[in-house]
Length: 316
Image (cartoon, rainbow, N blue to C red; front, side, top):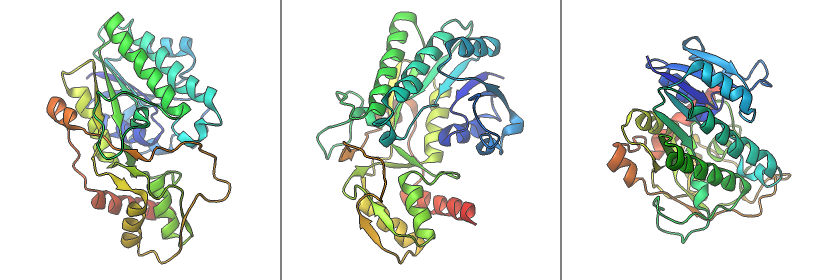
C-alpha cells in the first residue's frame, strides 16, 4: 500500500481528503504541535485508519525528519492559512505559513527514494484582477490581489522551479470556492446557511461579486484524480464554472431554508477590513477534463441541500 503524507489534515478539505484516501492508502496526517484536544475532531470519522504525526510546517528540520521517517510516495499539501481578509492584517504570517512551508516540503520531498508526486493546493485567487465575463484558463497572466494570493503564487513558482531544476514531479491545483463544511460557519455559504437557519440578519458584503461554487466532494475528487493520474508537472483549474453572484447565492439559500428574515447589503459590524475584493473570479476547467478526466458532479442546488443538512445537524 502506497504511503501518503497529508498536510492540512484537520482543515476543511484536508479532513475530507484524509477520509477519502484512508481506505486505499497508508495516510500520514500532519497536525500542528500547538493543536488543542479538539483539533482532531474533523478526523474522527477516519482517525482509526490514519496515522498522526505532530510538527510545524515552518520548521524545516522537523518536517524533513518526519518525511524521511515515513518515506511517502506522494505528498498532498493542502495545509495553509486561508482567510483572505485576515491576510491584509497578518501578511508575514501568511507568507511563512503558505510560502515558506511549501519550500520546506519541496526540499524534504526531493531526498525521497521512491517519490512519485507532489500535489500543491494553490487557489483561484492567484488570477486576481482580470476582465470580467470569461472564465480564466491556466495560461492567463496572474495578478494576485492579496497577501494570501501572493503567498500562494510564490509557492506555485517554487514548486514549478523545483520541477524544472530538480525534477520534482508535481501537480498544482487552482480550485474555486468550495463549500460543504461541517464545523465552520466562517465562510460565505456556511455563514449564510447558519444565519438563515437561526433567523438572524444576513449581511452580504459584496452582493455583486461573482464566484464559482464547488461542493466538497468534487474538490476531494480533484485531488484523488490528480494523485492517480500519470500526468505530472502541470497546473490545473478545478471548478464548476457556474459564475454565481453572491446575491443569487443568498436567494437560493433563502429559498431552500425558508428564511423570512432581513438581508442587508454590506459587511456586518466589526468585520475585518479588506481593501480589495475581486469582482469576478471564475475558472475554465476544460484542461482538467481533457487531461485528467475530471469534472464536477454535484449541482449547486444539490450541494446546497447537502450543506444545509450538515449545518442543521451541527446547530442541533
